[in-house]
Image 1 (cartoon, helix red, strand yellow):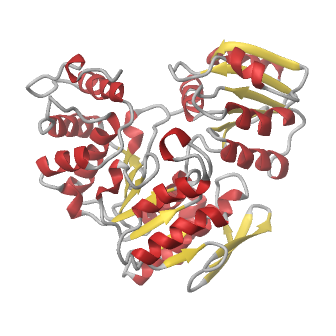
Image 2 (cartoon, rainbow, N blue to C red; image 1 turned 60 degrees about the vertical axis):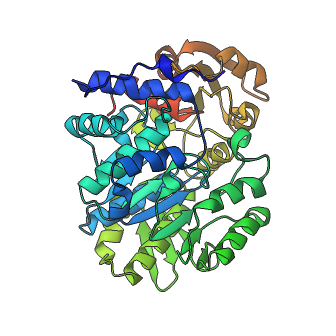
Length: 436
């Protein structure tokens, strides 16, 4: 049963400090996920519609949207723009969700925004956590005169709280089976939900490749008279070896590009970002080649094939669905060298646990089943019971810090430790390792 709004005490005045303010915002998670734009629209109307004062790049996709957004943010920042970047979830700190010129929001701004948005909340119909935080983001970027603003959808697209904006460009990175209880049980249904961010006459960039997923994207673009640029046709990338790749674009080409994000799949993500750059250039954005190259080599996207130490090498990757696990598996096979693979796994109970484990566990020499401190996390005993074709050396260690310590104790200098299965697992690992 959904809890009554009265279970969340909402003070009439401002929160006096950030801790109390964030406690109240986090309490909104009790209302779970609620699709629809009416609540977000009411909040923004009360704030005098700040979303009307910025230019947006709107990004959806099952996987890869964060990497594409991070690349765009880095490139545009290098080009001198006051780039806003709204993403979710955060790994450690709430402030990570709101970035301006690749820097996290400050405490004073967070407190001010919470108080401003809370002031227009109807206490008899409280918004969800994501609706409230999205209103904060749109208000923040308007106040800071961010230009452009990169908005990641939270889930889906059509009824996502971010779909309140009219963007310059729409980007749909890829489609895979995830969040099926909300978005649909097949690729075509999920693609139709993500196609809901396509706007009239607004260019669409996508690297969706499955025929069934392309059908609703094509239909939505045609209905909206929106130019559609397909990855692999209008633009593409090609690996050149030694971490370098070539981009053959909509109008131009670049050779000998490099990104510091690990994995050959990032070449495709980079191609999507570069196609967006080309279309922005056509719209008057001054983005020189030096900014493109420096942005790609300087981009940071924590928790996605993120190398945080060496000897033994330790990588954090938030692969939280089978498609992301398959991408990680390819990187393990093609892009990373090591003697033994030691996996530390923590997965949410509502995910396709078997699909994730089947792609990763058979590759490992040691598996440590664990869990983050999060109520949605599956018990490590459940993970162990569902794992097939794994190594003889396995451990069940519920405490993630202890699981990390065990992985480090059994690893030799040339081994590889990978912590994966969920962004919540990765976030807790980063916190334990003292990473900000």
